[in-house]
Image 1 (cartoon, rainbow, N blue to C red):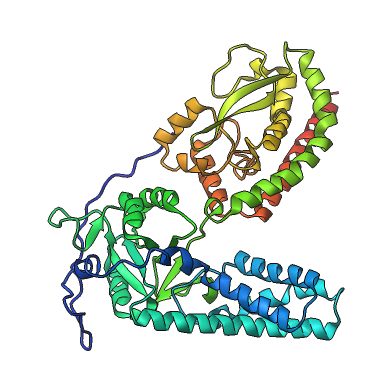
Image 2 (cartoon, rainbow, N blue to C red):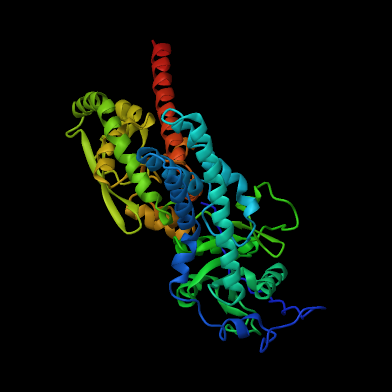
Length: 484
């Protein structure tokens, strides 16, 4: 396994930029950015971090409810339309509170969210009333958010409702970004400091507040609600793991593009901005945004159906295995999530007793065992683990504790795949990464799945898994026919 650990690198931290023409420092502001802002400025109110991320959802619900009442929308139609609009806005990521304050960037998403659910209402209400509902809802959403942004900007200009921000990494653009945060008071950003490995001549506590691995402690101590990542490439593996462990529903994380001066292939609604400096917001992840509930709901809807459909096949296969082995099934402990173990059930495919190696040899499996493993049919009993909640239909494949500990020690990103419950199939498996294949590549695909999870991605993986199994069965049948 070729893997080189990331080494600690100390690099010089550039000095803060002097005040340019027409720029003034705040009274008492020293040459160091965090010298005054990190200690003299009062911390935001304790309820600010939890309420501000919910500002847009609350305003959207309020104005949509008002429209439904004013237009006297029937109860069933209102209960269908309002949640559908809110869900559409949440899926499109337009309910987070951005750093920019231009509502025009979100106009397209607001109009789309207000219009798509109308298609269902045409069967219940007259066309004219449905169109009126859509127009009023779109106007109300734009008006409500405009008022919310105006009130928020006014309060922040007076030093209220501030959000604490830290910047991970220190370079020229990061320094400019920190200065822009301190100058533009209407943004409501209280710059706490940089997280970086300081130069040997610089003490931690002035401009460099702490080291990147202390991000979780800094977020807790300063009640940070926004983190900006300005890291170089050689630091990316280290920072990635730190950020993954710090995610929460109230922490907004953005990344500074490597070339901020070039236009990005992303809509303006999906970008943040601090005084002309573009930032890319990160997804908050399934484990931090309520995706676990949606994922478990999908499992409970599909797993019983799949269990009933595959029950005849499982019975026939278990009888065939029992004719060749003392027992048809065997159970094995696997790590399914951080600190959690589950006993997975599989059809017995190994003839030799006491096998503890990484993968059994063809001689140990026999023809039937090799056929079951090659077509992944030995995994069918794990649908019972899904029903019990120990596993999910889709997720990183659970591993034996002995190997999981070894892989986590050798591969920095391997332990991060345990952020979610293990699955019967996964993103790595549908790309052919199973059996004796690269663990590094598996961890990469598993972490990518976690970062970009959606119910649609789970359905895609399930369909692709069914396709892999069917192709394997058809290929096995053709090989037998050729052998005859």
